[in-house]
Length: 118
Image (cartoon, one colour):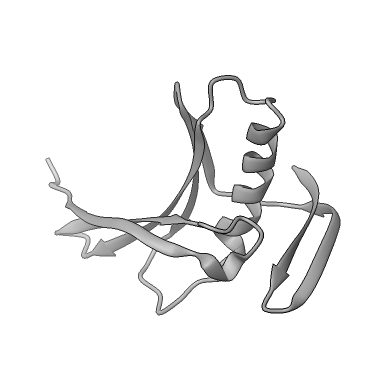
């Protein structure tokens, strides 16, 4: 997908034109679009743009009415954790309260799901 929009980091305005955006998974429900970024192992940090750029793309579509019934865009960061014998998934939901500023990203909630091998 390609997108064009502008945003700010601190006092610097950034304009992107026909930016190619990659995302690991996008799911649409009756009321939300969920953008997912996934990692196969825990990392100390990640690039905010991995969630912000697809968030902006879908939120702009939502605001234009191009995603019927969509009330919001949710952002999930999913990490595989644990061991091969005791696997788990950690999920973090983030929001961008100020959609024009990626640095406004805030943690909404987090959870860990321990998986059982059958």
